[in-house]
Amino acid sequence: MDKVFCQDILGSDLFASLQSYPDKYGDLLDAKVTRILDIHAPLRTGCRRSSGQHDTHVLSDEAQQAKQLRRRLERRCRRTGLQADKQAYDAACKAERDSIMKSRADYIRS
Image (tube, rainbow, N blue to C red; front, top):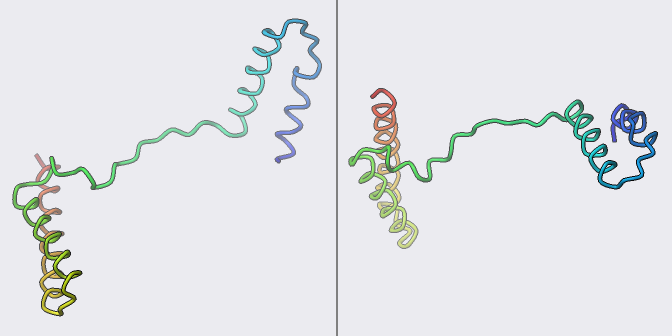
């Protein structure tokens, strides 16, 4: 544990206070520990963009169809293992990526 953090805990009113009521000591403990934690490890808040998992509402019909085709070709490629299916799947991946990027750009632009 960090030396400064330990010194702040030991130097706080927690050990010097002679509270006879448990509720008051609990409140003091909560307040002091929260204050010291805010100093040494402040709460971080942020916003993350959700993954592309549920982005179909943003995608155009063309992009959704390209996504479905890529998934269908992926399943076929895994099932058969043929080189022709692998090439078709790779082409569908590229087409899907281009279609999704165009659709998202159009959505952001509008």
